[in-house]
Length: 234
Image 1 (cartoon, rainbow, N blue to C red):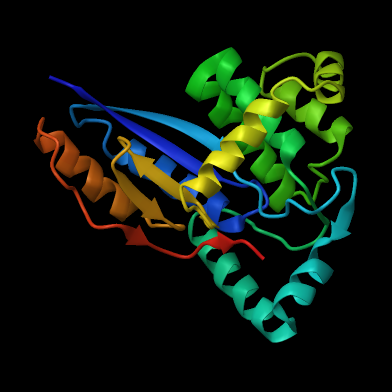
Image 2 (tube, rainbow, N blue to C red):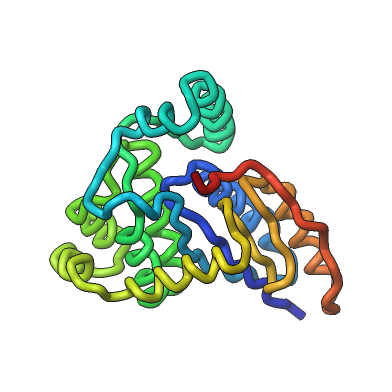
């Protein structure tokens, strides 16, 4: 008999480890398709730059250098670029960095309109736009194009949605709830409300967890808290 495994993935779209973690999770889910489990994934928002005005866009490279210093930034960039390449991701550091409330509102709307599959489609599109195409994901025109491409709504509807406050309160509340639970870095994955997997883990970590869950119907500890590289608060 198949059992359902519920994953809540807390992340921010400007975090490269969230992009890497998303791809690793995707590979893990594909690898365990034959197991007697159904994996349900819900993505919830986090905000790494809460103090950044919603309409402000900063030069990405300058922001990273100001935060980490030139040497440390080079080291981080090399590590993330290599890890991305191993997964077929071409992560770049040009373009701008912005606040992500608008993008998170669309992600939540995608979940409401089309469930897990539509939210996944939207996140794949916006991650590629931000990390590989250097597009400004704080810009309503860019976001409305992505919303239409993902099938959430037509471009003009998306523009109206972004100008409204639809889904804003829910997104802000989810961000606040994550912080109250002690989340200070992302990605942060909660499995069946009981176990935490922190950081951009490899697919193998998730595969082992899924295999263990498939072998038992009882609620038993599957692992200690697993920790990996994260994007953290300033």
